Amino acid sequence: MAQRSGIEHRWSVLDGGNGSPTTQGGFYGGSWPTTAQRMAIYADAAPILATRAVAALADKVAIDGITHLVVASCTGFIAPGIDQKLVTMLGLDPTVERLMVGYMGCYAAIVALRSARHIVRSEPDARVLVVCVELSSLHLQDDARVEPLLAMLQFGDGAAAALVSAGPGGIALGQPFAMTVPDTEALIRWDLGDHGFAMHLSGEVPGAIAQALAGTITLPIPANSVDLWAVHAGGRSILDAVARALDLAPDALDHSRAVLRAFGNMSSATLMFVLARILGGDARGQGMALAFGPGLAAEGLTFHRADT
Image (cartoon, rainbow, N blue to C red):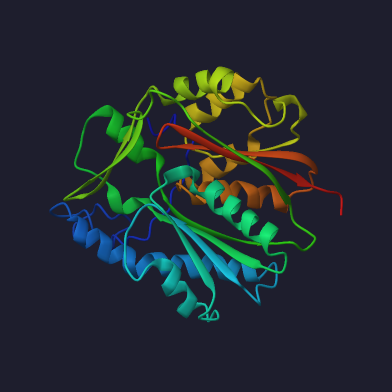
């Protein structure tokens, strides 16, 4: 399963002492940790990883004058939230307006970017900092069944940050769209238990996505008019299903496959990594961002990267 996953490396905030959190003395090296123990690590590690993502963003663009902060995360709960912690840790103005996008799963990056777009369209002077941070490795389960093992195999930790404003440069965020696919609510599910969040990822998900793209989900523009695809790298079979359903060129999802190969599925942060790869390349034109998650639901938006 690991060899066929299309994933060469995944990252974790956990320190196993000998290279793996499953070794003796590591987080999973003894008895299985409780949800409280997992959340204690989340409370410390998630804000730190998020600030590193913002620092990486600051190396590329000025992030002064932030008026709004939108944070997405589904792998932990703390109060005061990560959004409030980041205001202090980043030295933001304490009057910054905050929005926490919680427990929406892999498509939360779209929701966060869409929310930032709405803010900027209503307040043209707004400068919105968007942060996605996920610590999926905190939620390994003591389960030897094939489907749970496959779900756990996909996920790693990651964080990403973006600045959304009315200024020039980068990519222009366009029309958002959303669709909850009927009769699929059992296919992707997080269950909160005494030993973390148990991910249920059915083997029927790729087929359901392909079927939905062929009939239920209406894209705002035709697939054959899209030059740049930013599809959430949820897994090799999911990317294959999207490519087949939309009849995409063999290289259309190269950015998504590269992110999957290097980082695995980082839930909400994953799509941001794909967009970062697009921003780092030379390709221009009409784009489409698309992600899937609990529901089964699809969230997306169009974007455009101009020549200047």
